[in-house]
Amino acid sequence: MGLIMMMKKKTEIQLVKFGLIGFFNTALDFGIFALLSKATDLLPEVSHVISYSCGVINSYFWNRTWTFHKKGRSHPMEFAKFVLVNLIYLGISTLVLSFLSSGAGLSVYPAKLGAIACSLTVNFLGSKLIVFRD
Image (cartoon, rainbow, N blue to C red; front, top):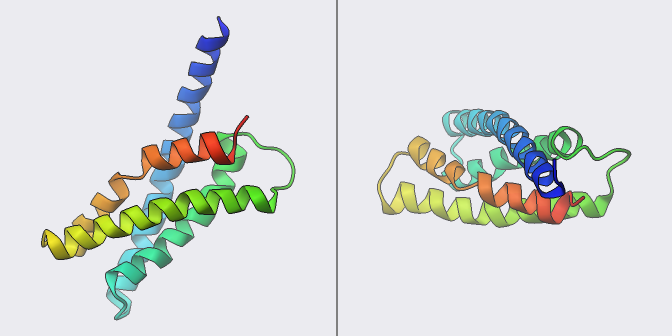
């Protein structure tokens, strides 16, 4: 198997793992979002930031060790890059959530799903190319 084929296969495996972790993080994010929405009077955007942050922390540790196989202790700069990539996504997804719930008139749950849908590619590429580079 050539080098390019091996790199492609490795990337495909990483993408599948990233997607699985993303699915779990999405469930965590959505669950916390729903709990905050039902139990508090927070604005949907505030609940979104809190719930998304919980998913980011979980995502960092799982993607670091399982998806991208980084060994040893994590470095604060690595975590800072991960947070930066996710802050960029958070800004985009918050705008999408706000647009879908306020502008397009969707209820907060379908709007949240729309905001989640725009994350996989942005987060995977940011994680692979910026945070956990080989």
